[in-house]
Image (cartoon, rainbow, N blue to C red; front, side):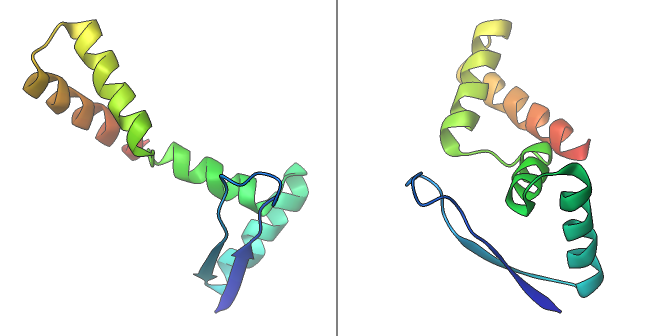
Length: 92
């Protein structure tokens, strides 16, 4: 096991620091991928979280608002649709 500390630009106060424990092989693969793609480890982790559908509360609310507007549904139906859309995104 190894500890991966994702450091962020301190000039961007909205960003946080995170320590993650990864299997050594996974950590090595992550570092190799970052080097091969010319990207930071943090950007790869961030992209992976977004691809899994991890969103902040405001983004989730926006998704609900879009669903309501698009489908002209009552709030309960709109929320149900948003949950389905989020789950479908996470499965990809």
